Length: 259
Image (cartoon, rainbow, N blue to C red):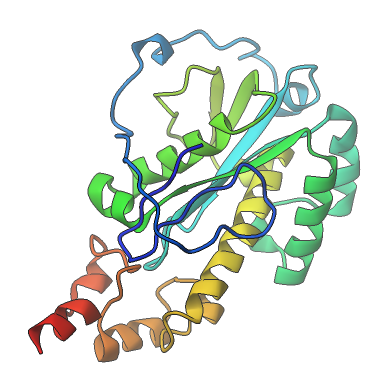
């Protein structure tokens, strides 16, 4: 299991399941670089590349849908989910309303996330911490979170549908990128819902530790109230220092150290 480094006095340990959130406690970890390329995965022929998304999803392959959330946030980790669904459940989930998580209310996302988890062959979370976002950049951190989620799936997928236009170049499993995949692929939409619910719960939990930023409401995104708090309070260790809105002041710890 990967242990994911954070740049707080906390470090987040990803779980092999989606049960209660991981404890916020220090752990030792090493950060692997997402930039190292496994040459065996580059330009690898992808089986079924001529099939439609629906044909891929309904095939007998173990197909994982993969999506991330929190890419544009100013605070907290980027979180990805990878979901393998039984082909027989695709129609049921379509009828239940599984779609892009951004088009759903929080309550409906929660309900659907539970339904997805109850029928999934496997459903896993991966994270990349604020330290990794600032070290690698948000794109590479997002791909790293996706890779971590995929590698936790048991049984492993035989094919991956990746939201966006960037392949995970360190992944040796055949994959297809899908622009706006959470709107066009049900398994990607399922992953987007699971990731969104999981990350929202984590940020709400962290809001108690970092009051004043309205995190329970904005989930770490740069709302007017959040940006005003940055000007008044400075940044915390869970703010992304590589993002320009977080570069306006010294961190709270820097200010404290100068006193």
